[in-house]
Image (cartoon, rainbow, N blue to C red; front, side):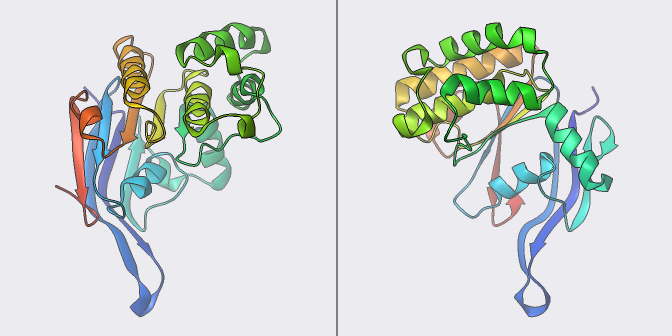
Amino acid sequence: MVPLIKVENVVREYGKGENVIQVLKDINLSIEPNTLVALKGRSGSGKTTLLNLMGALDCPTKGDIFFENCNIGNFSEMERTEFRRKKIGFIFQSFGLIPLMTVEENIEFGLRVAGIPRDEWGERVKEVIEHVRLMKRAKHHPFELSGGEQQRCAIARAIAPAPSVILADEPTAELDSKTAFQMITRFKQLVEAKKTTIIMTTHDPAILEMIEHVYELEDGKIE
Protein backbone atom coordinates (compact mmCIF):
# COMPACT_ATOMS: atom_id res chain seq x y z
CA MET A 1 0.00 0.00 0.00
CA VAL A 2 1.29 3.45 -0.94
CA PRO A 3 1.63 5.69 2.14
CA LEU A 4 -0.74 8.64 2.31
CA ILE A 5 1.98 10.74 3.94
CA LYS A 6 5.71 10.06 3.81
CA VAL A 7 8.26 12.09 5.74
CA GLU A 8 11.83 11.58 4.50
CA ASN A 9 14.94 12.80 6.33
CA VAL A 10 13.17 15.91 7.59
CA VAL A 11 15.04 18.50 9.62
CA ARG A 12 13.45 21.68 10.99
CA GLU A 13 15.66 24.43 12.34
CA TYR A 14 14.90 27.88 13.66
CA GLY A 15 17.31 30.78 13.96
CA LYS A 16 20.63 31.44 12.23
CA GLY A 17 24.33 30.93 12.81
CA GLU A 18 25.27 30.14 16.38
CA ASN A 19 21.64 30.62 17.45
CA VAL A 20 20.23 27.75 15.37
CA ILE A 21 17.86 25.47 17.26
CA GLN A 22 17.19 22.09 15.66
CA VAL A 23 13.63 21.11 16.60
CA LEU A 24 13.38 18.04 14.34
CA LYS A 25 16.38 15.85 13.49
CA ASP A 26 16.27 13.53 10.48
CA ILE A 27 12.65 12.39 10.84
CA ASN A 28 11.44 9.44 8.74
CA LEU A 29 7.80 8.40 9.00
CA SER A 30 5.13 6.77 6.82
CA ILE A 31 1.40 7.12 7.47
CA GLU A 32 -0.93 4.64 5.79
CA PRO A 33 -4.39 5.73 4.60
CA ASN A 34 -7.30 5.31 7.03
CA THR A 35 -5.27 4.95 10.20
CA LEU A 36 -5.37 6.65 13.59
CA VAL A 37 -1.85 7.65 14.59
CA ALA A 38 -0.60 9.23 17.81
CA LEU A 39 2.59 11.20 18.32
CA LYS A 40 3.65 11.20 21.95
CA GLY A 41 6.45 12.97 23.74
CA ARG A 42 7.27 15.63 26.27
CA SER A 43 6.58 19.30 25.69
CA GLY A 44 9.22 20.60 23.29
CA SER A 45 9.90 17.20 21.71
CA GLY A 46 8.78 18.41 18.27
CA LYS A 47 5.27 16.90 18.04
CA THR A 48 3.48 20.10 17.06
CA THR A 49 6.24 21.11 14.64
CA LEU A 50 5.92 17.76 12.84
CA LEU A 51 2.12 18.16 12.62
CA ASN A 52 2.53 21.65 11.15
CA LEU A 53 4.95 20.34 8.53
CA MET A 54 2.60 17.52 7.48
CA GLY A 55 -0.23 20.03 7.20
CA ALA A 56 1.82 22.47 5.08
CA LEU A 57 1.60 25.17 7.73
CA ASP A 58 5.40 25.18 7.73
CA CYS A 59 8.22 23.97 5.47
CA PRO A 60 11.13 21.69 6.40
CA THR A 61 14.64 23.10 6.54
CA LYS A 62 15.87 19.88 4.92
CA GLY A 63 14.18 16.74 3.65
CA ASP A 64 10.88 16.04 1.90
CA ILE A 65 7.25 15.50 2.81
CA PHE A 66 5.06 13.64 0.33
CA PHE A 67 1.26 13.58 0.32
CA GLU A 68 -0.16 11.00 -2.09
CA ASN A 69 3.31 10.89 -3.73
CA CYS A 70 3.31 14.68 -4.26
CA ASN A 71 6.11 16.66 -2.59
CA ILE A 72 4.22 19.36 -0.67
CA GLY A 73 7.51 20.99 0.34
CA ASN A 74 7.82 22.23 -3.26
CA PHE A 75 4.42 23.92 -3.23
CA SER A 76 4.05 27.67 -3.64
CA GLU A 77 2.26 29.56 -0.87
CA MET A 78 -0.94 29.55 -2.95
CA GLU A 79 -0.66 25.80 -3.58
CA ARG A 80 -0.10 25.15 0.13
CA THR A 81 -3.18 27.18 1.00
CA GLU A 82 -5.29 25.25 -1.51
CA PHE A 83 -3.88 21.95 -0.25
CA ARG A 84 -4.84 22.78 3.34
CA ARG A 85 -8.29 23.96 2.28
CA LYS A 86 -9.14 20.80 0.34
CA LYS A 87 -7.24 18.04 2.13
CA ILE A 88 -6.58 18.90 5.78
CA GLY A 89 -8.71 19.44 8.87
CA PHE A 90 -6.94 21.07 11.81
CA ILE A 91 -7.73 20.85 15.52
CA PHE A 92 -5.50 23.38 17.29
CA GLN A 93 -4.59 23.47 20.98
CA SER A 94 -5.84 27.06 21.06
CA PHE A 95 -9.13 25.94 19.40
CA GLY A 96 -8.98 28.66 16.72
CA LEU A 97 -12.70 29.43 16.97
CA ILE A 98 -14.07 32.71 15.62
CA PRO A 99 -15.34 34.68 18.65
CA LEU A 100 -18.26 36.43 16.95
CA MET A 101 -19.66 33.21 15.50
CA THR A 102 -21.83 30.67 17.31
CA VAL A 103 -20.96 26.98 17.47
CA GLU A 104 -23.13 26.34 14.39
CA GLU A 105 -21.62 29.27 12.51
CA ASN A 106 -18.04 28.19 13.32
CA ILE A 107 -18.77 24.76 11.85
CA GLU A 108 -20.48 26.30 8.82
CA PHE A 109 -17.45 28.53 8.30
CA GLY A 110 -15.23 25.44 8.17
CA LEU A 111 -17.54 23.89 5.57
CA ARG A 112 -17.50 27.07 3.48
CA VAL A 113 -13.69 27.26 3.55
CA ALA A 114 -13.50 23.60 2.47
CA GLY A 115 -15.80 24.29 -0.47
CA ILE A 116 -18.64 22.04 0.71
CA PRO A 117 -21.93 22.85 -1.13
CA ARG A 118 -24.23 25.03 0.96
CA ASP A 119 -27.16 22.63 0.66
CA GLU A 120 -25.14 20.07 2.68
CA TRP A 121 -24.32 22.40 5.57
CA GLY A 122 -27.46 21.89 7.63
CA GLU A 123 -27.25 18.10 7.76
CA ARG A 124 -23.51 18.05 8.39
CA VAL A 125 -23.67 20.65 11.16
CA LYS A 126 -26.50 18.81 12.91
CA GLU A 127 -24.65 15.48 12.68
CA VAL A 128 -21.33 16.66 14.11
CA ILE A 129 -22.96 18.75 16.86
CA GLU A 130 -24.79 15.62 17.99
CA HIS A 131 -21.57 13.59 17.88
CA VAL A 132 -19.73 16.03 20.17
CA ARG A 133 -22.81 16.51 22.40
CA LEU A 134 -23.19 20.29 21.94
CA MET A 135 -26.87 20.31 20.97
CA LYS A 136 -27.79 22.66 23.84
CA ARG A 137 -24.87 24.98 23.07
CA ALA A 138 -25.27 25.28 19.28
CA LYS A 139 -26.39 28.93 19.46
CA HIS A 140 -23.69 29.96 21.95
CA HIS A 141 -20.51 31.89 21.19
CA PRO A 142 -17.04 30.62 22.19
CA PHE A 143 -16.78 32.99 25.17
CA GLU A 144 -19.96 31.41 26.56
CA LEU A 145 -18.46 27.90 26.44
CA SER A 146 -16.15 26.07 28.82
CA GLY A 147 -12.70 24.99 27.62
CA GLY A 148 -13.96 21.47 27.03
CA GLU A 149 -16.95 22.70 25.03
CA GLN A 150 -14.68 24.88 22.88
CA GLN A 151 -12.49 21.83 22.29
CA ARG A 152 -15.53 19.81 21.17
CA CYS A 153 -16.62 22.63 18.83
CA ALA A 154 -13.13 22.66 17.27
CA ILE A 155 -13.33 18.89 16.78
CA ALA A 156 -16.77 19.17 15.19
CA ARG A 157 -15.55 21.87 12.79
CA ALA A 158 -12.61 19.70 11.69
CA ILE A 159 -14.72 16.57 11.20
CA ALA A 160 -17.64 18.17 9.33
CA PRO A 161 -15.97 18.61 5.89
CA ALA A 162 -14.71 14.97 5.98
CA PRO A 163 -11.13 15.89 4.95
CA SER A 164 -8.56 13.32 3.81
CA VAL A 165 -6.50 14.00 6.92
CA ILE A 166 -7.25 15.46 10.34
CA LEU A 167 -4.26 16.83 12.25
CA ALA A 168 -5.14 17.22 15.91
CA ASP A 169 -2.83 18.86 18.46
CA GLU A 170 -3.77 17.55 21.93
CA PRO A 171 -7.47 17.25 20.95
CA THR A 172 -8.53 15.79 24.31
CA ALA A 173 -6.48 18.07 26.58
CA GLU A 174 -9.50 20.04 27.83
CA LEU A 175 -11.90 17.09 28.00
CA ASP A 176 -12.86 14.96 30.98
CA SER A 177 -11.91 11.28 30.72
CA LYS A 178 -15.39 10.12 29.68
CA THR A 179 -15.72 12.70 26.89
CA ALA A 180 -12.13 12.07 25.75
CA PHE A 181 -12.92 8.36 25.45
CA GLN A 182 -16.01 9.19 23.36
CA MET A 183 -14.01 11.50 21.06
CA ILE A 184 -11.31 8.89 20.40
CA THR A 185 -14.03 6.29 19.79
CA ARG A 186 -15.54 8.68 17.23
CA PHE A 187 -12.10 9.13 15.62
CA LYS A 188 -11.73 5.36 15.34
CA GLN A 189 -15.18 5.06 13.76
CA LEU A 190 -14.27 7.65 11.12
CA VAL A 191 -11.05 5.81 10.33
CA GLU A 192 -12.74 2.39 10.19
CA ALA A 193 -15.38 3.78 7.83
CA LYS A 194 -12.46 4.85 5.59
CA LYS A 195 -13.54 8.46 5.78
CA THR A 196 -10.28 9.97 6.99
CA THR A 197 -6.78 9.51 8.41
CA ILE A 198 -6.16 11.08 11.82
CA ILE A 199 -2.78 12.07 13.24
CA MET A 200 -2.89 13.45 16.75
CA THR A 201 -0.54 14.42 19.54
CA THR A 202 -1.15 13.38 23.12
CA HIS A 203 0.66 12.46 26.31
CA ASP A 204 -2.42 10.93 27.97
CA PRO A 205 -1.61 7.25 28.79
CA ALA A 206 -5.30 6.28 28.76
CA ILE A 207 -5.74 7.68 25.24
CA LEU A 208 -2.54 6.03 24.02
CA GLU A 209 -3.92 2.66 25.20
CA MET A 210 -6.75 3.08 22.65
CA ILE A 211 -4.50 3.79 19.66
CA GLU A 212 -2.71 1.10 17.67
CA HIS A 213 -0.11 3.26 15.89
CA VAL A 214 1.98 5.30 18.34
CA TYR A 215 5.28 7.06 17.64
CA GLU A 216 7.36 8.68 20.35
CA LEU A 217 9.37 11.83 19.76
CA GLU A 218 12.27 12.64 22.03
CA ASP A 219 14.66 15.54 21.47
CA GLY A 220 13.46 15.96 17.90
CA LYS A 221 13.86 12.31 16.91
CA ILE A 222 11.44 9.40 16.58
CA GLU A 223 12.36 6.75 19.12
